[in-house]
Amino acid sequence: YFNYRVTQYLTKNGIYDFWNWFDDRTWYPLGRVIGGTVYPGLTLTAGTIWWLLQSLNIPLSVETVCVFTAPIFSAFASWATYLLTKEVKGPGAGLTAALLLAMVPSYISRSVAGSYDNEAVAIFALIFTFYLYVKTLNT
Image 1 (spheres, one colour):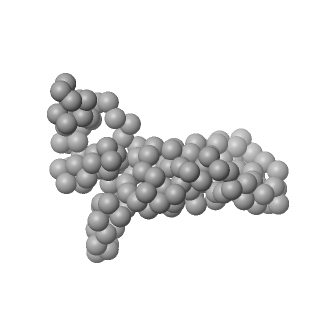
Image 2 (tube, rainbow, N blue to C red):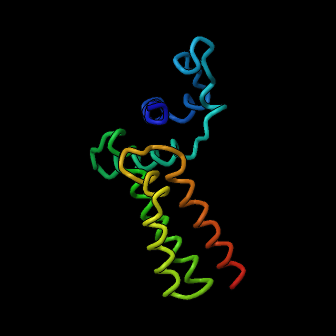
């Protein structure tokens, strides 16, 4: 719920207020400076997707975007795994690696709809960064 609430605050109040937000409901009774202590990747990604959809006149709620962030990025992670392994070993190995990633139980639990946590975006970003690095070395 915390990540959803942070994303909701970001989309409602903007990036400047997000960085300076002191939340008195988190770590009660002390409170917490959210902008300085939270990992912003997930929040900024979902917020950007929501802003993009709003600019295209696709009226989805912030909640809907948050619910579907993990499954969408898990599909991207399988694609990135295919690209990385294809670059290193070939297309057959790439397809096998993508299928294995899609079936790993610990990854399935982090990529279902409603699992709104940092791993959804982070695993895709990690694999895609490795792919870009290997692609750079091979070019």
